[in-house]
Length: 241
Image (tube, rainbow, N blue to C red; front, side, top):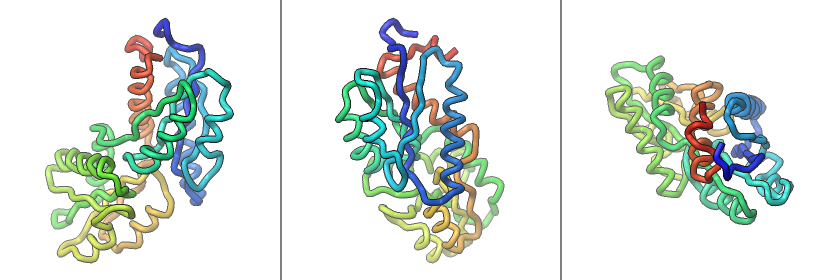
């Protein structure tokens, strides 16, 4: 551990939140995986449940209840940047001293590999392949999804376009309705919920399952957490052994 590392670092695993019981269960399982897999790190992490929408406890409340002066890192359990990262999480972190935030998954090569493997199980020669994401009106999030689609295309060695459930265009249902060939939707959604149901209702020829449960997805989030710990000076490369 770095000499400057604090005795305890609070990790707030902040999910969007969902009314779907299966989706809630998968997020709880993800938090448990993250805590277990980071248990061997040479830093003391205390994990907390938090949400940016739909469910409680709300992220700002969890931050406010932490012991004064102890450092905290928000780990967004989100695929890409959007209002929830650039506004909700950023505002909550700015309101508390010694707090920072990790990045969402974004275009991680490991994530692209998972998505490509999911697609290969459904792939047919005549299909149009579309990466379907939740969506955001922010360009930074859309760029991340386009880059992720490019990485998936490299894995599959065929074109992969992008569609969204909300917040950005083109919408998944419009892409499926206007397609001249069968469409395979690769779900870039984290867990079951409203958007996965929306993708299922498009009439696409194929639809992959949400990202969870998958141990590799947990490892992807830990990559983002490691980066945040390094940037904050709480972890060195030796601490990962």
